Image (cartoon, rainbow, N blue to C red):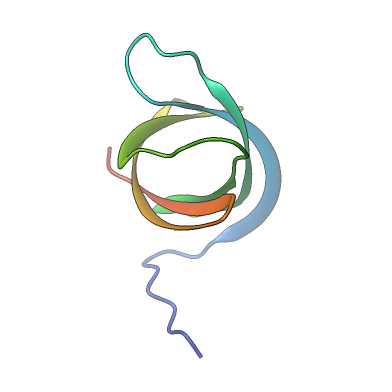
Length: 81
């Protein structure tokens, strides 16, 4: 079994959000499936995720992220701001 390396408790959800890859790029739709103080787990189809990006949550401010892992259409990201 894999060890849980998270530093804060995660909360499962099903929130719609946007992901933006750089200044001036158009935001793309995604779904957040869980969130913690340290990061998010996201589902995004047909998107090649760069190492760093911005996630625009439906509530709150945009967050700068770093890609942590990816399996198919799901990926995890660490908040870096």
